[in-house]
Image 1 (cartoon, rainbow over the protein chains, first blue to last red):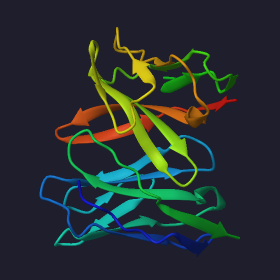
Image 2: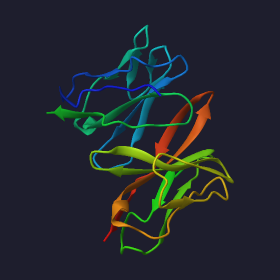
Image 3: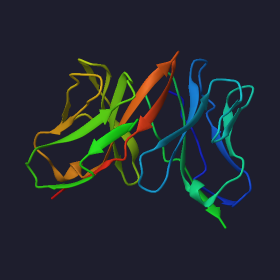
Image 4: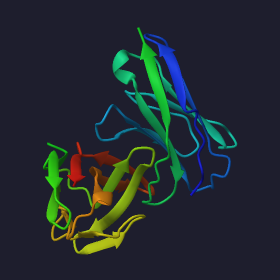
Length: 108
Length: 114
């Protein structure tokens, strides 16, 4: 499973786009990039995942570089409710390994 | 759909006591996992199941047992609780789309062992 590296914390102004980076330079060809978030003490919430193409859903967009060594999760219009810990995970199969994630603070 | 439900929400156990944490999902997902979350440690998988009747160990299985008799339920049993098992426990269900898996987590059980 590829190791991922994320900044410890980030700030974002309410209404602006939040861009959360993730490095996964050792990712292999069959490993997906997943993003989850955990708001306060709730259970983690699935956001989005992708293999090599950019992906978009109602929550976020995922931009994966052509060499697949890094990705960016984009929350287009961050709200105060998006304050959470965001986890980037790169792996194949059913295994899931959560690191420390990025703590995103959305400020009014 | 209720999604993934867990009971109880909170519990206090004494060292050496036993208890079962309940997990149920109504999404007809095949895959179920138990995780524990400790401060500074992230989430670590305890046990998982890919189908009824099939279970396997995760990263931190010692002190825990699981069973899977049907698709919906995946109880986690602590036979003789220890203070080191004080944690927040999450159950997650998943289905596969090709070779990708999205996991859906329950609200958690906060367990304290004194």
